[in-house]
Figure (spheres, one colour):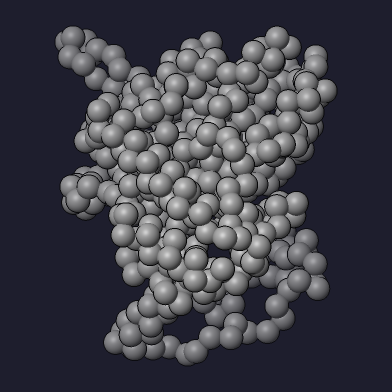
Length: 446
């Protein structure tokens, strides 16, 4: 370990202090078969000039949506971000903000978080929201644990129409906490209601639903909610916040806890992160929320101020009493979310959602006209839709890439039964000319 700047005598004192004889003893729990057992395969030192050139060369191997036209969604979406968002984030008082460990002297940071929480409540129809989660997937897992805690039950149902990677996170989170996770299959792109009713009985803590679901389809939330509440379980909805410009809020649909991915506002794709998850709920579950909540109050002089309240995380209270180990502060991403959504306003959000809807439906109609391609489902959809094709999806996408077009997601990766199916996404960033170019190329490939 040449990179460790300790002398041999310092190492000996450190090892003696913690009660081991050699550095090797610190890695006793790591199986020998997974150890590298050789030096890292990297070059020696570089000058600054060489290093900059090398890193730029590596970065240029990535292809971005500025160079390519992308019709790929599946949880990470390309939306136009107003220029002022990045300009304000570049100000040092914003981009250096981290966890306010002395919160009451960080009034600007607290107010920004408070405004973020307020916006999340407004678009979801919930009573309270927390500061921010890591991402949509971990937010859903935390919501599942909230449902178990609130109902004192240990079984959770999740629809297979929920994002497959969200379900993978659930499988990581829940079993170690003694929670049984049961997946409900889908039929025609929506939840199989007969299968849900067969599993939905006493003892179920919560039911996890995504709307629009992973296939882009909408329209089943209220029906499921009635069945869920009849069994005393909680309804947990994962939503796309852009769609809420047109659809009923989760609150109007009867949801108890609402989560989602906030990347769609103010945050670029960034090759997968950092993102931010949001989590909101009914007031009666506020004390079961993970992370932090910022509240508004008045000081002794009657002046409005902001405070951190209900910090039910392990850094602030006894570890065994903590609701979760959500520690990192996503406030910078949440600030971008707040700026973008504030600029849109109620009318702007509706117009944005309408543009996404119209673009996607235009693309779907045109693609469905191509011989050998058809829409897989007849359900209403928002800005994603599934296309069934006679050709191999991998061959289609390879051909599209040659024309600098990023095609849809090959669904066989997550759903073997959906072989020869592609999930396309069309947002407001796509012009009619770009959609027509995609359709033309798909026609030529077919």
